[in-house]
Length: 396
Image 1 (tube, rainbow, N blue to C red):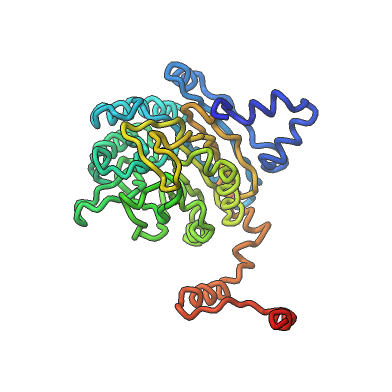
Image 2: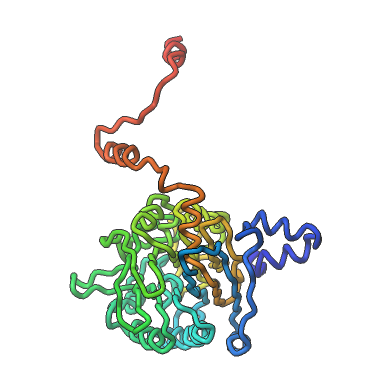
């Protein structure tokens, strides 16, 4: 299964041509009456991708033309990548520098295409070592969200390419006792720091031992108003929590990035569904990013499930994609190689879909709020109406 590069390859190989369009419509939805348009990649960017072995895909979402409002066009890029040095036993400095060199080429390819907002994968600055429960050497990768080496690296590139960059890192918060956080830093197109968002939900599933390193965010659900639109960051495990998605929408997000690190045996059937559902129900665009490759660690670790100790997490299956509020989505990037996906969005589509479906307008927020306020009380009782016949049967 790990050798399967892309579901599109399978579709085009095995589905008859006269049926292929309908199959893709069912899988990917229609954007204004047709599949999301695939756009040619500029030769200079494609040459860079070929030279450095990363895939580039480019798409365009459409919206209705409006009389009073001009199109609100924004070009979004998302990056998935393997770590730069295998195995992970290379020194901290070697791994960090190799990752910056790898990402510099992919970010340059985004800049050559005029990307306005770019998001990297979860903790792109390091191996995803949160399975190991080892504090050393992995916490050496933690850095300041304002002045860390990888933040300074991206601030220069953001300014160079006039690009907002979302940089998910392992943050060391020196102001608050060297607390460690899983954080996304939002860097403006001028190179300044706009702000940061943190992971709201921490997994305790299988090998994901992340609570050894950091806890849930204390920053809420911030939305960042950039020159290109209002964006938010729902980091990884937060995608499994519907209310988490909803609050970003209530705060006015137009694009929500979901930088993730998740493996095939655990979550791959969920991956095509969750971000797309969020885009539909909250009427914003969602950019779902998953790292790619298998990462091997020097020391064995266990999952507490009785299975033998092992040195890898499993296969991070990539498959990054972008979903729109009208239920359409792009095909995903490869399951096995580095990639850059670029998509042109018209943010007017968000309001157009709201007007069509009326999800926010018909939401029963006072009822939901009342229920949730009761649910969190210790004496909460579910609203269950019991069949009287059950009481009679229990006495028999």
